[in-house]
Image (cartoon, rainbow, N blue to C red; front, top):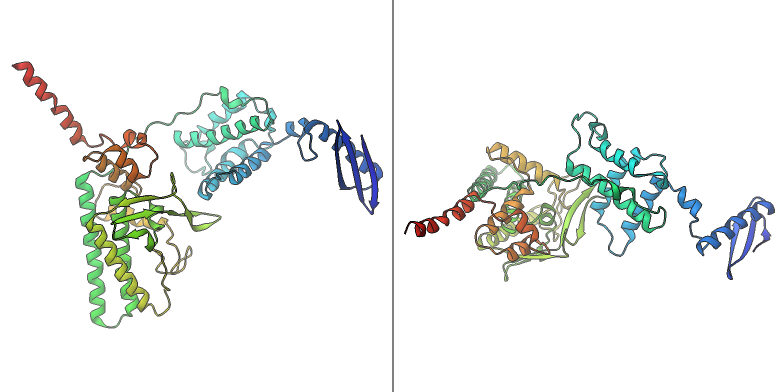
Length: 425
């Protein structure tokens, strides 16, 4: 039973009692009649949901895909273990560019298996692309990524009692083709490090010549040296610790332990259009990862620290001392001097570096694959390889990095020579 009492002006208090459940709320209404109409709707809601803030079956059945997407993203961000900002931005882009335009105006309850199948087929056409200039369809990996997000949203819609069943359950899911891991072999990694050492020395020599001339500011000269040593160290860290780009750029001085000869990766540098460049605590698969380093890497880091400290001294306040291992050395649109290093230029420089030296083209991230493949095929057990990689188990290492070298496969085949010898006896 609902009753309405006028308070003043357009304010009314509604009293409700439904199935021995009492509730009251102040509402805004144009008139007594309008207030009574709202009270009836509130009475129905209280009866169906047990709460004035609950959703009736009618309200749930009219929910649009856009509303579900907003609710789902809010859930992902505010759950006990929220998704990371980079992931949130990625999901939001997939929603804005692919899912919401296709299901514009659709009610969640109206989507059936046929609609889900049509959507999946559409994703496999060039028309699904945001960039219409590209005539080829999305890769299977991208299609799977988009459809999986839609599937997860619909699963939540079932859990939230918005729909009775998930139409995606009866759709044959897209399968991503297994990609062959691209990596450098031992000789190529050695050549890469030789070339980076050669280029670094050339820059140090150029800085020395500039210093002899005496007409360059010490800060300018020191920036050339630190910039060269920075790139050298970043590549060596990628090769010798198998860390991701963002993890390397997220290093602070206190993460280096010279006594233990170890580095502890604790955070990542990431970039999104909304947040810009930022540091995020924790790594992709765990909170932190301690790896041990060899003597040559220890010396590289010590020398880099020495030159970086000198840069602070000669900057005359332009570059204030901080704990970042890698930082912006000149003002750009993306960052200012002393800020966290914007990640993309490192990958762009690495691509040009390989092209200039005629090295096989790989992405910066493939240095991680190269490092882990080298470890897995040169006597390091899978448990240790997984620990270096920061994985929670050995499955990934076993799947992608073991038996990566043809030389190892040939060696395995040659072991049957012993069997043949026994046969001949």
